[in-house]
Amino acid sequence: MINSIALRIADFLSNYPPFSLLEKSQLLEISKSIRVIYFEQGKTIFQKDEKVHEYFYIVQKGAVDLQKASENELPETIDKCDEGDIFGLRPLFAQENYQISAIAAEECVIYAIPLKEFKPMAVQNANVGNFLIESFASNTRNPYATVNRGTLFSEEEKEIGFKRENLFDLQLIPVSKKILLVSPEMSIEKAAISMSKKRIGSVIVAENKIPLGIVTDVDFREKVVTGKVGIEEPISAIMNSPVICYSKNITLAQAQLTMMKHNINHICITKDGTPNTKVKGIVSEHDLMVSQGNNPAVLMKAIKRSSSTKGLKRIRNKILFLLEGYLKSNIPVTHISKIMFELNDATIKRVIERCLEKMDTKPPVKFAWMTLGSQGRKEQLLHTDQDNALVFEDVPEEELEATRKYFLYLSERITKRLNMIGYDFCPAEMMARNPKYCLSLTEWKEQFSEWVTESGTDEILLCQIFFDFDIAFGDVRLTNSIADHVYDILKNNRLFLNRLAAQALRNPSPLGFFRQFLVEQDGENKDFFDIKKRGLMPLTDAARLLILEHRVKNISNTAERFEKLAQLEPNNKEIYQASAYSSKALLKFRTKQGLRHKDSGRYINLEDLGKEDKIKLKRCFKTIKELQELIKLRFETAYY
Image (cartoon, rainbow, N blue to C red; front, side, top):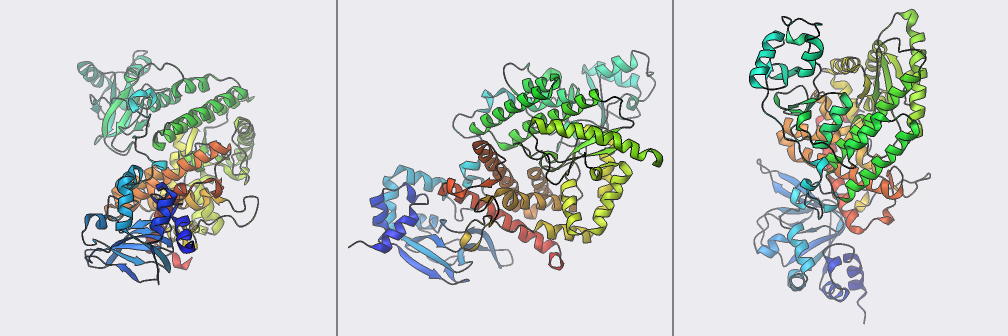
């Protein structure tokens, strides 16, 4: 007689590794000996120091908390297991007492699998054995641990076929520590003598080792030798400021792109890659190898030389081809994002330059073009909607509307050409061609003050978008002034941060009852999973909120924000590192989906995903719940 219960158990197990690696006959055989156990919420499955059971466990429905005692002896959840997750295996193999406790987090059905039946199959099947060694080598199978991360999203460089030394554009550039720091008051003559003695081609102007500006041989030739500035003047009179800074992990491609984009031949290396920390070294054009063949530097040159919108569109297609190649080679998404940002940024800059060339008159005042959203956060890999804004210098009131009219016309031409290249128009018209987002410096400051003061739902949503701006073209002093104003009005403004926190929690964990994916219930994307809304946005909103609370400037990338938070809050290091990993993992997954289906990758048909992919996604989403719990405790969100 056919055992229908065993068949149902085998059918369930066949969807999850390592059971999916067994033969059907083996799976059915082991299913006959499995116990089906029901646990009410809060019931204990096993306790710390308890003698190991004869079984290990897999969650069939519900969820299980794995807990350890904290320093004050209170239980602390260190991991969560949901459908398809195995727990209690390592101590069983090691024949040692349980080091943690397993508690039913909700009503759940657990399959108890006898080791004596399973172990011979694991020993005989090399794939099963390898899986167990790699995936369950710890007590907890902690998703925060690097060794337990799924290879689908791996940031590690251990994938077959990927060797950094074989990829010119992703090699880390050697950083020279032979640097000369001088005070802004030092005379040009003394600085030049010091450079000559050290036989170096640049000098960094700094205070307390914080870079203020840089002077190179070119500056001496063009500003001093020509007689424009006297040698008795302070070195600050000829320095280039602000300094373009990066951290020591800058790649050859990134260095080349940065130098070409900014028309510079030196990059300053600081501790965290911003001008706010001490100088650690310098990279010069001399340090770069001459690029050969088809790589990002070649594409950057093509962008800068392009003389038509059609030409830029062709280059954009090549950039997507490059992106696809990087993903297929399992290159870390951190490197991919940086290179794609530089190419996207250069494309936008070239479009603006060409539009300015075609204008009948020059701009009446200085201005800056700001990119918002994913491009502002340096996370735009695929073609997405264009979100942008424009700020121009203050002018007398009688000239304001005429000045705005000029920049609105310019913005109309720019956004139209960006659309032709592949950047769709923003459905909400959040673009510089909209008079609401083409403002003078004072108007922008008043606008931010109004958003922060009123703090309604619409204002909070706009703040979340505009707090992630980045300058793509123009006078950086304008955008810096806006940034300074934003941080001034946020100082000690706990009420606004609490409201921002409430908005950051509007998208809860993307897993529903029994840990199933929450999909769209209606509309054209019905039954599809929205990875942006339910996966990426909760992480992005949380990172923005927490970095604003710490008043940290110049870091807009979500993963980099979490990495900075891990430094600032060592007690929350694990959850922030997990959040940084999850943000990169989900971005990479969305990008792969977008390239596969030739769209934005936002909406995913879960039927197209294998069980393993779903499991790995779920483990990323566990981090979101942990992070949102942290925000709930820290901010007074209950009132909003």
